[in-house]
Length: 206
Image (cartoon, rainbow, N blue to C red; front, side):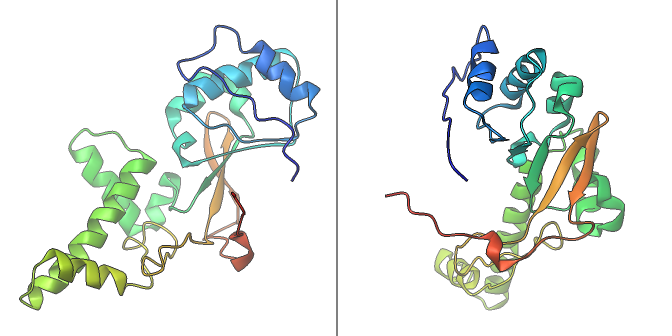
């Protein structure tokens, strides 16, 4: 990829998003990745729609996997892709772990969110290490950290694809959800995760 536009914007929102949308089109941007709040992307998408500008792909981070984004953007969000490494909420019936997370949240009238699923995995990771230490009669911070460092594969009990906490490296496993008809649907792969080792690349930020 060649980066041709790194436009910044007011994180509190722009009074007029049209100039930003026009700048993307003028620069020939074909792949868009927006960093920020879903409501701001919704406004940009609407501005892009008004000038009939549609890049080849808009790929977003997990925080856009939220119904509020779809509701605020309307039809302009159709086709937006969202990367995730977690079982989609829509597939919870086939995932006991995700169904249990949803049941726990809904039982307390909480909000189902991807960040909540991430927090659940983190809590389970801690609890698993703490339980092992307790069984050894050594429930200390040092013991918990040592057990965590020895864990080479973690899926949050099935909440997400395999990760390797021992190396503190990113997982190659991901899936893509697509905004479609007012909701989310799996886009890639057809099932499970894409865990090709080539999904993780080393970049030079110096």
